Length: 273
Image (cartoon, rainbow, N blue to C red):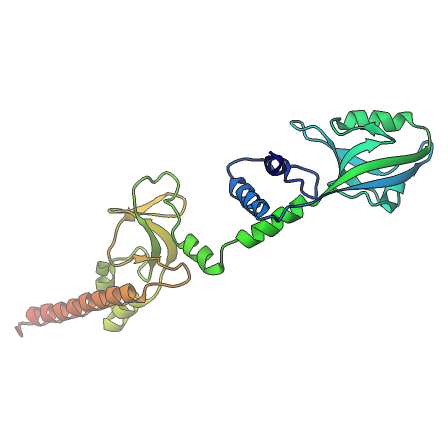
């Protein structure tokens, strides 16, 4: 039961706000639970700060509280005020002031109590919750390696609005062109122009390929799949050079064939064939 309470209450970050126990934080909470089971418990310290309050002057503590949780937390201590000279710091939970229990109070109750005091010494007891430091340490220990993060990025889910299974890749070295475009370029500009048109990288958009269509990262339809202009992305930092070379070879073959056909047609027109 003690461990359950520790996990349930953990999460007072330096700004005094509690970490919500939702699905997003569940793995981190589980990691903290595991570390606690191994005997690595976070600490919860208590300090007593004495502040001399002068009549008509603020002591310099800004407090906050959560609507769905009891307790008042120090949000800030103003520079140059009596509170600044003490050990009260952001994120601490106020337990009592001059023996009056405020562990389950709100900001209004604490403010009203302080306003009723004219002057004198205030003994403020606060909890220093070190568990947020512990949680961050656990999070760093649980963080995946750079290789794991790279593999995770290389296999994202489909883009928004696309339900079909597919793979991510790069729409590159042809862009929206096809082998026919390369052949036409070769026909009008010569063999060199055709090869350049086929092999130069026109576009490097990351795309999602289903069986028949290509989509961009936002789920917008780019068009039907062109076998020559898609490189499956096994690693986001590299391009599948084998696929690129194969596509360029196909385009070059089409370009050369177009040149041959062009010259045959010219010879035929001149009656030489």
